[in-house]
Length: 228
Image 1 (cartoon, rainbow, N blue to C red):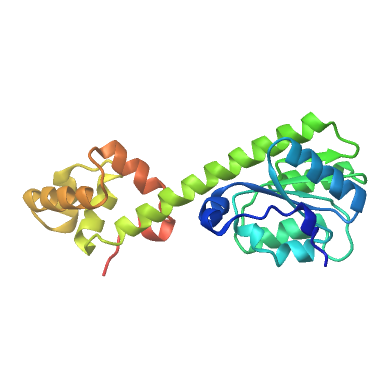
Image 2 (image 1 turned 90 degrees about the vertical axis):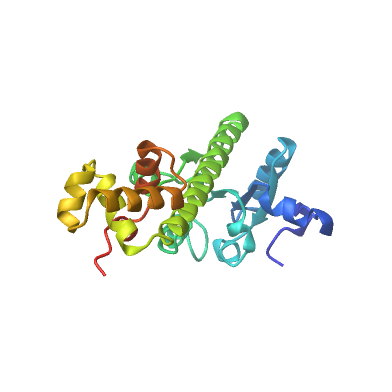
């Protein structure tokens, strides 16, 4: 079996949901001694770590859906660490990555960092340097997940708007006045105010500032006024 089972944390069934929310650091390195040393270090610092000897096994693991980060060797048999980074980007998985390698060079470092890596470290690495990078990566992942929850919430709210409410709010967030919106849409100012009030209530925004901040989290397709 390729996954180091001795390094997996077994959770009681009653704590399964809690464990799924806890961050886990997935380590992929084809060197047995390096892999074991990394997991020992991470666990000694209080982190949960799961180790793999190939990126293919990591790709097939549900650990990618857990909060946390990845520590990847760059050069491994099969899919390299950099190739895994590209694959995850293509499927929309933004899990933070720390590269740890004994064969790094400047072009490789630039490529990894431009693609969003948290850090690119060379072996041997100081324990504290690695742990600091892991802490930063976990914080980044937590922020991204929190932002994703807000975006999902706001996308759900905007879909409850009627066509006219959506049109009115699109103009409101542009800073247009009620009378300007009324003229453009061919309706009265009173009707604009009604749609504006109803739309803001549905978007759970009590001020224009809250509406604008929420609107800016939406994908472009939802920010654009529906014409039909």
